[in-house]
Image (cartoon, rainbow, N blue to C red; front, side, top):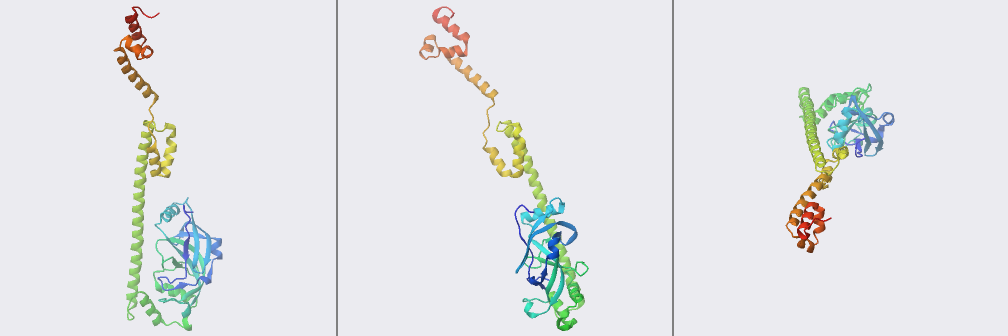
Length: 333
């Protein structure tokens, strides 16, 4: 699963950019629920996880991704989903029935409505066919249809015996294709082929750009992580050196920095340096030496008046004895 719960719309009944739509009430999800495979871009060689919590609603099919984090591709895509770089998915379906009924069509719909269909797989993709999701068609043998080629989509419909008004009007069909490709009614098949070729090229270029940007983002994240690791090591070593933490606390702070760099940095900076005992002793010695020099300057009488005799004796027995002799003419017994 991802770090945070994310629910994807696998597909809905909206008009896609291929010119047709799915009727949600005609979806068969039973086989898919038994094997809810998640692919990367409809590539059967890249199974990156499974779907859980599959829910068919009036406005679409929804599910939560459960990524295979032991798979390199699955782990990377899960990271991109968690970071919000990828937000779309696509259903791979096998159409079973079509209808050209006007009451089932949406405004601008050129091709028939898929009224019965079977969900085969669902993939994570960078772009959707409409605002929420994408759709990939499969033929009866499970072979993916080239969705960039309207002719193949129409051919698939033909293979299911779809005949609007019991006949196929080739001229009308081609006009629909031309309209879908934003071509004039008097365009030729060569014009259509050129338009489709451009669509495929644009799609390939867009996918290449997405890959390029993803690689750049990954490199930037790696550079940032490496820099933070180097900085955290220096901060931890400095903290050990100035006594804020003990050496045996280093592994715990390494884990803190790995989990949350900024919070760990704030926590470490809030600690106060500790004065080592050797430093305290040395400071005490220096302070005592200065005090002794001041006491030596005083006479026995002044020392007595200021109640400093015991302190002089504590700091220097020898100087105390000399002061005693100077006052009483003999050393103390």
